[in-house]
Image (cartoon, rainbow, N blue to C red; front, side, top):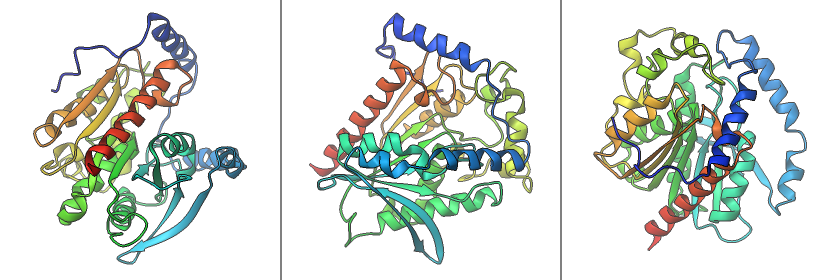
Length: 326
């Protein structure tokens, strides 16, 4: 298994104390569980209600979002596009998280606005279908379709611009699955200049840290995680679940771009990141960071550490774009 850098993440003891204090609040909250189709639908409805007025928030930054349905090979997919005020230097293909059963493209507006303004990129966020009503293979098809639409645009808005794929949690799973599927079109995969992945799920049978997850796991339902993965793929056995791209961990990473990966020490999914980094780095440079005291989802938390991770990620995106366009 790949070893994270010997140099610890640059944070003060006060910063880590802030993380530990926030974890105490998380410990009182219910864990995210995938047990039925009803609860995710309720959460999704609440999410959409909370997003009313989102256009006004973008206007505060001098930006607006375009929602459109694109199509490649007869597969329609909704995307949300946020463009910089000036000329874009690159494209970020954003794939949101949410356990495959909740979430939408708009939920990442805060992160995406920061990337647009700091990195001078256009962000294309994918509104893929959700697994409450669609098999997980359908979600993968949506993400592949959107990626092909961006990468095939050789005469339009995205022509010759470097593309960075960004994914979080279930979105990181879909991001790597998408890149593995793109190996069918080597010229398209070659246009991907980097992958930024936050605490992804890469083995749908559960890595060792998932299978050993205790009941007090923060945010996620530790003991129920393996069963939740099986519920997403009820028609398959474990041997079939391990086949790539469904389980990206077992894919071929030849010709993959450099990657930046983050995971938390308290995240049951930490082995997923460490193991895929080890396999990936045989083909391309991989920088991986395992954050102390950090659970799943930590980039969303109001901590100095989370903000420093996001700022570093934006610096990495800018560096990858500059390295590609020299």
